Image 1 (cartoon, rainbow, N blue to C red):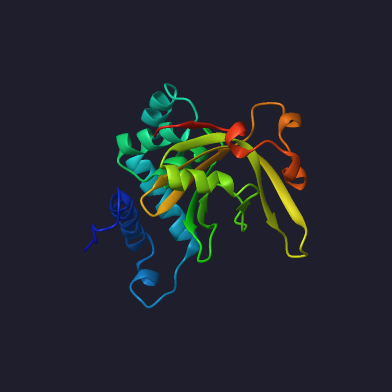
Image 2 (image 1 turned 120 degrees about the horizontal axis):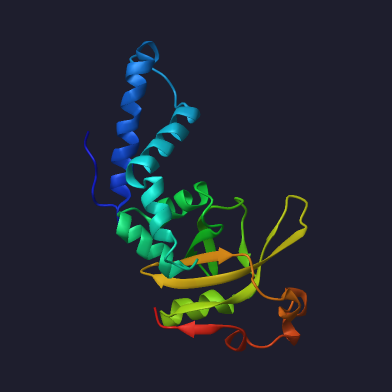
Amino acid sequence: MIVNRKPVGYRWRFTIAHELCHTFFYELVPELKFYPHGVNQEEERLCNLGAAELLLPANPVKSLVKKFSVSLESLEYLASWFQVSAEVMLLRLRDLKLWIGQLTVWRPKFGGGFGLDRMVGGTKSQWEWSDERIPKYAWESGRTTRGRTYVQYRDCSGGLKLKPVSYQIVRRRDTLIGFWTNPSHDLSELPLPLFRSQARPASDQVTHHVS
């Protein structure tokens, strides 16, 4: 096995564990594995599960996660502790039904604004921030920004879909990392995007913390 260790973080460890799990299928179904074949999605899923068990055993994860609140900082700490990426850590926490949340990665768009690069733990839609001042502030300040807002996307018929979230967002090199959870407070205090012009400025709605 030859692994490129250039990827940032610990992604190469999950890749190795995933590929090791493929070796079991050479034992179980050699008549298939030693001949040309396409990608078997069920096998890929099982190898992902096996890699998660190797790197993130259920009992140690459950024991450690009890000490942490659900937050982006906690997620990144847990990922560092187990030496996996934040994406893998969140998927494991969701799989064990310990956390419910979505991790989003954003990149600057040509001409301004930010586009969703990838999302872990949620519906794959072209989500956007209803208030672009939130990612802009996080990008320019380098500070962790947190608060409550709406995110949105348009469905295939052009209808606008809204989702209320409690969020944390912070700049990491050339990307923004956002963590969304369900709001824990009264949504009546949260202005709808339709009435954004009447809403308070973003700086009044969120608390900014140094990362």
